[in-house]
Image (cartoon, rainbow, N blue to C red; front, side, top):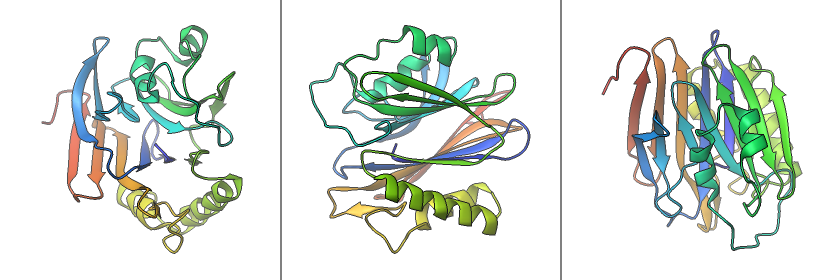
Length: 241
């Protein structure tokens, strides 16, 4: 929700990992399978908004970060929670269909990253700044990091990109090493580190990781307060649970 990395592995495969920075009193439910628009999906749920910040199905994976390019002024009421935007994305044929036909007005700014893999892999960035939609196709063979503009200013975002670049050189790009990066990068900086804590008003509450490989798609969710880990699977042949 507030920090996201994309790591390509083998052809059509990738690791997609996000840290959720949130009010520690805001409850979240671990991932379960849901049927939306006749598509079976995996996602953790935010009961307060009834949406999610990260979702995967057999066609694509999506993650939403709060804010677009710069920190915006919070001006409620908004039409709907941004977590519902992730679920509504499933109604559309592709990202262009979503951009052309979804009603963005009166929704708080966000950045949405989409990895599609039904045929070839594509990596897309959709930013809504409150008045305009900005769309970009990215190189799916290149690793990327995003940080929420509502919590991290440009200096902090660039510093995190430097941490990411240094880590990629030094470490093998495995699922466990990606998780270690999401837990330890900037560990001496509680304000801007990936595992952040700002006087317990906002802190990293969970880490969610999607892995797409030859077996299909799986999601790992770690609640950092309870230390409970949930793993759920969508496979190419059959469910593993």
